[in-house]
Length: 240
Image 1 (cartoon, helix red, strand yellow):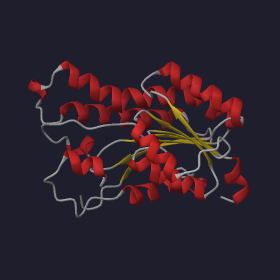
Image 2: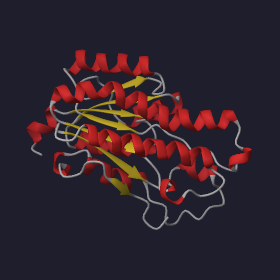
Image 3: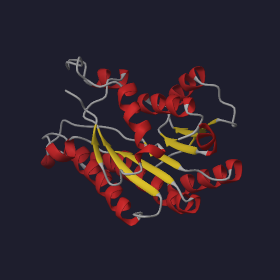
């Protein structure tokens, strides 16, 4: 993709202040794509602002709950008013909770995993599609999980939620076939971030992929060069 084409592209990255989001946005900005990043946690936003220059010309930061469809629609309307539209949607909001077999998983844990992982993707992608169709070119990227194939025990709610995310994106890929808009899935296992190390303090993290390594794959999937990819599940777990 040429520089002029990149400068006309606009990306929306939900969960953009997390480890993967920050690494991806750095790459998008390097390609001169304009970016709107969403966040929920103020501390993450503060760190993000220290790393990047927030100017509402090339990079905008908004506090938006991606599980709220009304807030997402309002965000998309604001972006259309601000920059005329958008072309790339990376739905990166998510979370993990384990330690419970199916029979021990209570409603709170089910709802939490479905909210963070599946509903956030639904309420991000659904309202975005009309805008992407109108643009005539687009990329949608969601984060699934290696757990969709392997279904490890003790994390039923997470496994089910990520299976839903994967099915959502692959269904969307079929619906968008021939439109110029593609939808694909990243399938990590565990990502080497401070938050993950804190959650799993005794794990061996030597082979965990870094956010930067996964972001390099995501950046390609979101580029014009990935035209032949639609409905793909891309493994990004290395030897983890």
